Length: 77
Ligand SMILES: [Zn+2]
Image (cartoon, rainbow, N blue to C red):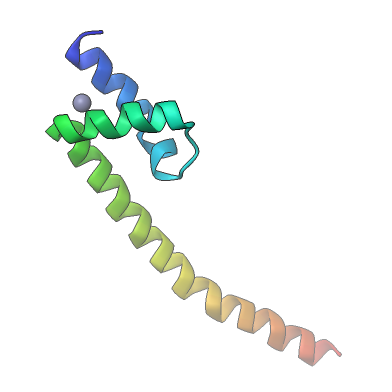
């Protein structure tokens, strides 16, 4: 595998890696590559940051929504 082919392979798996969906063998392949490849590490860091931002914005939006649903139910009954 050439460097760029390996990077492509890693980048295809970096999302699943982040979500903990990879097997032990793949996790080792990805994490070893991330340690030696700045490009892929940067990609992984970006992914990590984006996910936490998305998660945070979901969390702040879903709270009032579920509250609304509960208030709605209370009003119906
Ligand atoms: Zn790479």
